[in-house]
Length: 136
Image 1 (tube, rainbow, N blue to C red):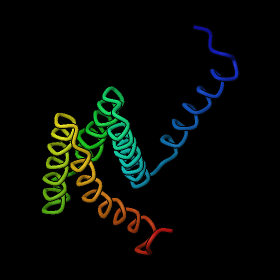
Image 2 (cartoon, one colour):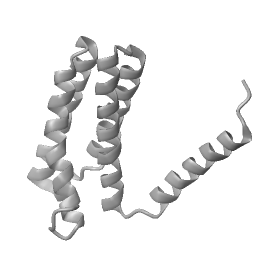
Image 3 (spheres, rainbow, N blue to C red):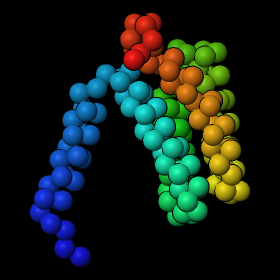
């Protein structure tokens, strides 16, 4: 299938833009990007479930699980983070379990449960980056 040059250029531009954002980001900003990507995947999964699009649902939930496992959980430092890191690890493990069940049961309420658990953590992370001020 032929892809017009303008579409290919736009795709490359988006990839470069994302890579540039990652390359220039602080560790704090990288975690914020993970939270943002996680929320996008969870919202997309909810939409896919509501439309009955099983393939897209699985793709979005799989991406969300990878973000949690490889990004958020993988970025924890138990030696420095102590009890907080242990609590976040437990929360992330619980969220992965709920998303797995959401996928198996096609249960949007389980995805919504994860959203409700992650949003306060993501907001808290954003406030840390804003110097303790709530982010706009």
